Structures are given as C-alpha cells and as structure tokens.
Image 1 (cartoon, rainbow, N blue to C red):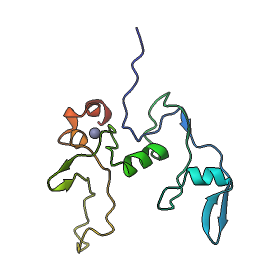
Image 2 (image 1 turned 45 degrees about the horizontal axis):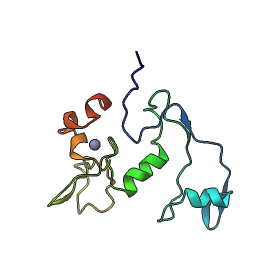
Image 3 (image 1 turned 60 degrees about the horizontal axis):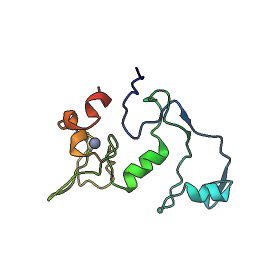
Image 4 (image 1 turned 180 degrees about the vertical axis):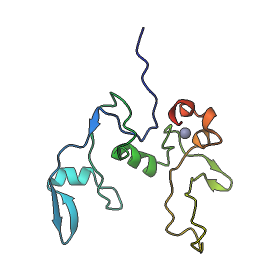
Length: 140
Ligand SMILES: [Zn+2]
C-alpha cells in the first residue's frame, strides 16, 4: 500500500520548500540581491524581484505561508490556473478572472487598480470546482 499524497493548489508551498537566506542590497536604484546571477534569475521582464524558494514538494501543503514564488510567477506569466495549472479559460468575451468584492462605500469608476485574486480555469472556479481535476480535494 502506498501513501496518498495530499492534493493542494498549484501555487501553495509545501513544508519541504523554504526561502533560503539571501543577502539583499538596497540602493537608490532599488532592491536587488547581492548576487547578480541570483538577481537576474529572480527578476521578471517587468523588473519585479521574486523571492527564491528551494526544496521539494514534499511534506504537507503549507496553506498559511505565502504563495510559492516561482509557481505563482509561472501561473501569472503563463496565464495558468493557480489551482490546477491548466491554461486559463477563454471565451469569446475574454479571459476568466476572479475579482474581489468591492466595498459599496467606494464609488466604482472603473476596474483600474483592482487586483485579481487568481486566473482560474473554469474547472477551479467556485461553480466549476467539482469538475476540476484536483478541485474537489483542494478547497474546503
Ligand atoms: Zn483549474
């Protein structure tokens, strides 16, 4: 008999993964890693510096931790579902997005500045959750 590996959303870190100690430099140009090679490896095309993460997807899903930086970056840059890593769904109206509820007190003048929650595929949205390859076991 083999042990069943728990299922977790793609972007969730595991207890076998961790952020290594990394020396950073703060200068008038901004924040960077002291190691230029590491800085280049973790900086995206927009110049955003991403946190390194090492280790393996072993142990348990660490739901209380920050999202896994490389998998979050992969999901964002490649328009993948943050839950099952499937390509985000598109319809004739565009790409499916989950957006936060807006405060009724604040007048809505547009969607500028509203941060998305994730780019899900239809299988991983609340209404499509049960049909997601992993969804029924990932979200409670
Ligand atoms: Zn999905």
